[in-house]
Image: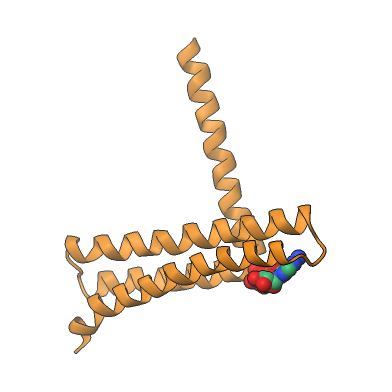
Length: 121
Ligand SMILES: Nc1ncnc2c1ncn2[C@@H]1O[C@H](COP(=O)(O)OP(=O)(O)OP(=O)(O)O)[C@@H](O)[C@H]1O
């Protein structure tokens, strides 16, 4: 009985998380760009028959970019809600959150180059 309730709650939490991903994809143009880039990279991975040791870094950096972009969007929304007016501290918070996305994107680009450039040339 208790286990059934626990499982029901976990399924509900999972449903909310899926709703969050859908909301992110619907409301953020950046998210759709990431989705297209992700599909292209995964398609290229299958096309060039990447090995498991090549897939792993690619999947990790794709995940890093999605997670940082989603959390950056959350930070922006929280700050816009709590402090809609200009404030230097809000600037700092938003800039650092955006910086995290940039770090992830740069690492992803380098990882992609290290794996795909030798295959292409
Ligand atoms: N309330 C604010 N106070 C101070 N600076 C802000 C404020 N809002 C935005 N900024 C500055 O503008 C930059 C862009 O903020 P914004 O919230 O528009 O994000 P964005 O990167 O344009 O995101 P999106 O394109 O997803 O809306 C921030 O990194 C910050 O430097």
